[in-house]
Image (cartoon, rainbow, N blue to C red; front, side, top):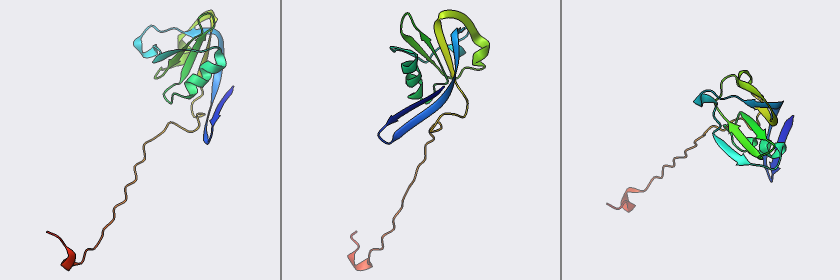
Length: 121
């Protein structure tokens, strides 16, 4: 499933694998969601993940409209638990556009020569 969001010139996309009737089984703190949001459906849950660069997986609970966003999980598919109320999705590695942002810094230095007679001490 390809998720795309376009706002003006800001285009983002990613590809997610869908795991119906399953949720992430979190026995350790490395599998806890970093945030929960209320969304009306699975698609809006996917968009919530798209807007968070650290999001690598989500679980949407139909009955409560709760969308859990996950980051930093190791082997997401190895921690699945059957749940007919839940749909889980993983961001496929390398498919997020733009890729996770990196900070780029540019500095410009200007040197101005001041004639000695105009130099103020």
